[in-house]
Length: 212
Ligand code: DC
Image (cartoon, rainbow, N blue to C red; front, side):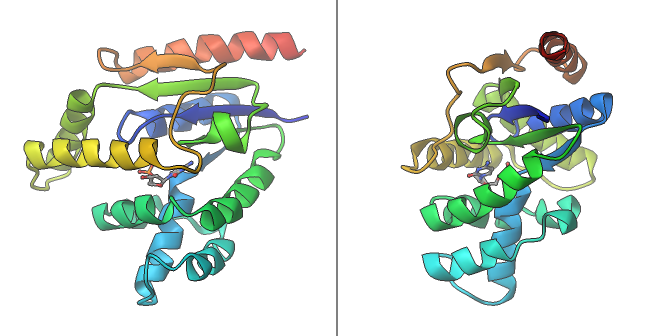
């Protein structure tokens, strides 16, 4: 059986960077499941199709190619907003979860990050992490990231946006964002990415030792 690491948490908590580092450390395959929702939303937008037709959105979701997810293209703010809207639809979730579960089986191991990995997609994952940070810290990180990239950013608008996205992700009926009961909580509000990585590595190492 392959070794699965499930990493969940709200937007901008640092789980993407952490997941990539963990995957690199152990030579595991990594899937940012948010990109699958984003790719579905982008395909609908590009085709001029509505974001509120579940059957149409499901068809698009079934066509998403996991090997062609481009983070740079899909990271646009408008795509994130649209993704969070189509992510409330059960038929879209079913289609994407199927593809995500197939990905999770890759050998020698996989790291999946998202909102419902430990609770729904891979409930038997060997290690589950719930990475979070206060909304203020997450908004500040996103703000600083945009400024560092040469863009313009308004902290208050980003803060409101983070709270709105949390509300949608945590409040939906199907697979809302919440920590799995057996998840390790990692609050990165006052933690560097390096410290978060070391904490995660300690947990993964312990689980790997148990497996052999
Ligand atoms: O992590 P992200 O910002 O790329 O995610 C975009 C949206 O996709 C997010 O608002 C909710 C949705 N999503 C989800 O519902 N389940 C996941 N496993 C990952 C993302």
